Length: 272
Image (cartoon, rainbow, N blue to C red; front, side, top):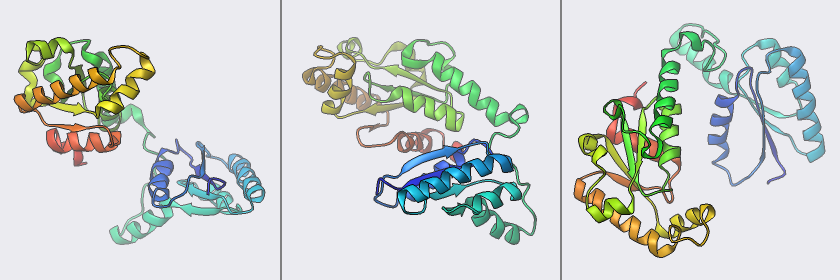
């Protein structure tokens, strides 16, 4: 069903509509074409999007799917008048909750509507800057304020996990690679010793690691399967000796890895 198109229409960024919509779509064995249309905050813009939805529906011979988080009733009415199957995500959940709570919602548009007064937003920016500064072990400064320090061999997924933790959860995440010199010494980098309680390890299947490294340095010793097997085995042995929890990134998404780390090291960040 790759010939099916799904629209995510919002009067803000569209991230909420796309994230929740994708969670629902993942329950079906389909690979539809995705189109996000953010900042649809006027009737004129809504008319343009509806024209696109209608043209797509007619061209494909089946209704386009439309996930929407539009708040403005006039704009929403235009979107709902399209030929697509419109799923109003706010109406589905907010209306029953208004009845349950006995109050009207504030109809706030989007997650980022007033970032100048949002302390959580500031914390995320600080965490992103911290994670960038402490990527790949390039700085040992201020590790005492890190929430998490990820360790593992090069290219096992530390950097994307660090940035995801920072952007989504405001976690100050540093990451430090384990290199052959560490294995020869038989101990973790000295910068990590005072912070072992914050460390979490990532590992990866050697054959998958070899694939990833070959994309960066083809036919090198660094990317050879033999070397990858050696580094992964040594890293896992070191983490086991040091009593550091770790998991394999081979078959796990960044979201799953991040949630596991939060559960084990910062369970308070799973409570909002």
